[in-house]
Length: 243
Image (cartoon, rainbow, N blue to C red):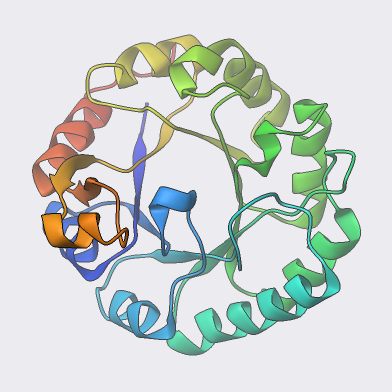
């Protein structure tokens, strides 16, 4: 099995760790503690200079995935910024109030991202029918979907991930993410047949106490570690070939 690793980051330090460890792709965000928001243009430009394939998260605010007309306008401008900065692709996901994918909005965003790579993010973990959503992602021209199999952690959603992977049948890549570590990636690959993985590869780093005391930050933050990336890459590289 030829495996790939995408690492999500939200700062220049994480970008350097990804470059040093040689990830297959970067998901570039701001505010990973909020689930990942659109990064600023400075970080986009730095990422474009890294020499790595970089996909920018396009999510203008925290909270749910239903987009207002104002959200849509911001997202279109953010896609244009990602293109202008020279990034390889974007990560998108928009839902209707009933939880299904908002095909009209996604068609508009995908048109704005024409010629760029596109990943459908974990909005798919909230839809009522993930197999139907895989078909919709194919119709929209996405390269891949990122999913935990509708569970908090991908290992707990392995059965659904396997179903999604079988249903995709080579039409689109299903990438497993959320709680993927060197200790569980081999079991996850065997259980699902999936060879594409997404992880943060982070450790908890303390924030300065004066910053915490003033309410500017939580007690700790996630810090991307090159050593963790290398360890996960090594486990993925050692995956058994499919039967």
